[in-house]
Length: 269
Picture 1 (spheres, rainbow, N blue to C red):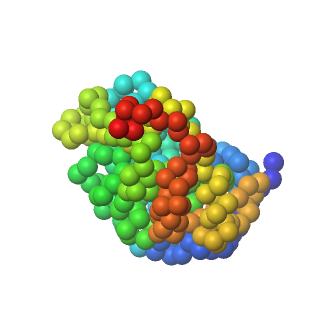
Picture 2 (tube, rainbow, N blue to C red):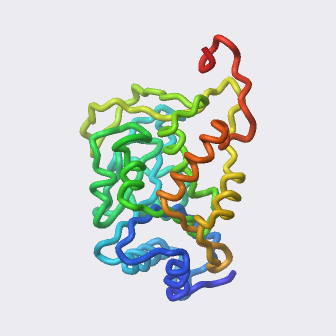
């Protein structure tokens, strides 16, 4: 299996436009990269964490997606401190939420977890809604955040586009509220919990490949190779502006096909 080095990680971050003091949201697939030189599998997450946070410096912030899908799928209560990250997100987010210096936001299915200067501002809010004003995704955007895919594909880092859809107000999504409780280290949090979800009756499927092509054409996605895979990076501001532009041209731009809504049935009234 191909190996990569600490210096190659630093070089890839630099080539993708990551600088000291940045706030980054890191989607990751570490095993796609291969083996970190002179590092055991057991210590991989710790080593990657130390490399990236040292690169970002004391003014930097590292965030990861820390979703607990079982809240919506299985109606399991969510605890900010105790609930694990869903396995499909990979080993690195699972490692981050176990750290004592980690701050995790309140919405079970779209929460972010972070460490560093802006982690408390972004993740320790008073809202348990998924996206929109004062959500972690909005704060990530407004503080100049960047999103990277570390070992994955460009599409892996585009959960942020659901925030764009929320802010634009697309007709194929709606706000779903939950009665399943949320906790913080065993103490119940009395806040409404909502997710921004698609209507189930119209075969609505997201497809971001067209957007990725457009983003590459406009030069807002930076890319370099690392190990057996890649690192991609983009600025939230650029994603947001291009996303709004695309939705203004076609409200269903992010979908695989246009929904066949039925007259006089939601959302076509």
